[in-house]
Image (tube, rainbow, N blue to C red; front, side, top):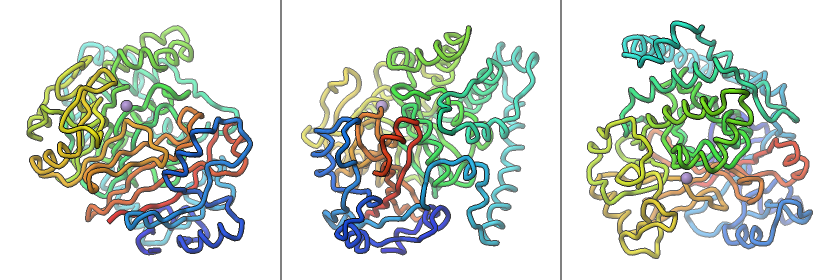
Length: 459
Ligand SMILES: [Mn+2]
């Protein structure tokens, strides 16, 4: 169990090692339930139904209940006081590293330098649009690595927005767009990697995740979309992710979600955030983002066996090559394979296909999941798009997993967030981020959250 549950998180970011489920249970029995964070889906749902944020009674901490063989839980104890303190952020290397790890890091760095050189060469060769050329002529490029660091430095209690200049927006959007437009609609990627679900502007949670699981290029990420809307810090999320894409294009995949569509994010928060927090040119920057979003890839394929997308399946998805070669940019999709894949939801009660109550895309039954996996030769579908209280939902004999990575969604739900870690042999670990139960009111108030980690393994 302990072996299965070991991750870079437990070895890097924790001081007290791995606690077994048995230990967690006995601790819970003895009344120390403050740090035991996972609970059964049933219990969590029951609790969440009657909770609003200001209630002072029991928080979404609970006792681990092993429900089935699918669910073997272990708990890693984070270092005490796991807030994102500035000291920790500024000293990522304080986490003890063995020599071998340092060597590995140097190798990664060397590989990365080569990739970066290759990529910048590719960018230079690419034909830029007229605006792009004007942009390059008139403006100095920003130092993207410094720019990345700034995102970690400014996050502290009381700082909830980052002020970007117009030049920074333009630089990041144009550079990112150039890279996205050179990617296929279906991106092939090798494991190991971490697959992440909806973020919805929860920037502090995103930063927390990078600190806990490693930042690109050290850890490779596949994000499945919905970076913007709902949350307060969509701009920070998208600017950080785009900058990672610019710096390490081979180590991070950013897929499109249904909220990376103009008609959606005009309505659900992103447009508002742009016009209120960017002086004078908010509308213009919002429009630039939309043009960039049109170039985002739709789907990722990990080691030819795990297919990732934001929403789900489409009746038009009959062949992966067709999807791979789908032309981009894709402006304002409202029907067809791309639209379906951004909007669809699984529903075990549906036989085959049914028009979605969302007003776009379909819901599909488990027989569709089985058929599509067989037809496309994939073993697993990973999608996001629906909030789950445990952060994940496994369907159809492990053929489809839903993940949702915005814990305490909208500061209203008491859900966990979850990401999936895919190893070289395509083993999957679910890493759930559960808001800690101590001082939760204070944490919410300061918009700085704490994640405890629980790790589920599935066979
Ligand atoms: Mn969505």
